[in-house]
Image (cartoon, rainbow, N blue to C red; front, side, top):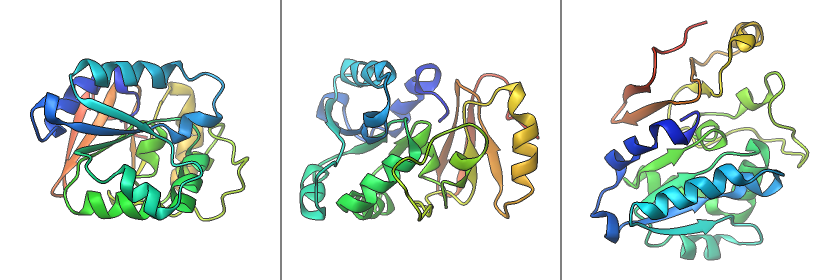
Length: 202
């Protein structure tokens, strides 16, 4: 999803158990290098207000064994926004990337917000388009989870059209564009558009 606030109640579709029996892994890695973390704190408050058990995870300093232990009993993986490059780098270095990929492929629901959406795609190349994230961590391998067969561009504003039009011509992958308050729900290969207005086309 592009921004969690307006469509986050749709999250309830993905919660597989009674709310008070659901454990959510709230992956806040991408926010760790951001100055303003208020968006992440608001999401944590919302998830806890549902009655779920919410455990924040960054995986910084973890190895694969520790990452697997943290994710062992989770019912839903909720990956927060922030810096996409840092997020993917830490997930891969910690082994959490492999653990998350296996869990999602075995049926654990995955919710991605902003950067969390980008890493659900085949690559995070969209994060390099225009004035988005800085790759200050030196990430070279942009390959991502490939949970969906398309790219997503989020936080769309009308001034982004020129950059998107140019960059979309350089990729072989379909690009789905979301503005804040919109989301895509994907299950069994079926894509459902959720949110205000209609899907944006360039």
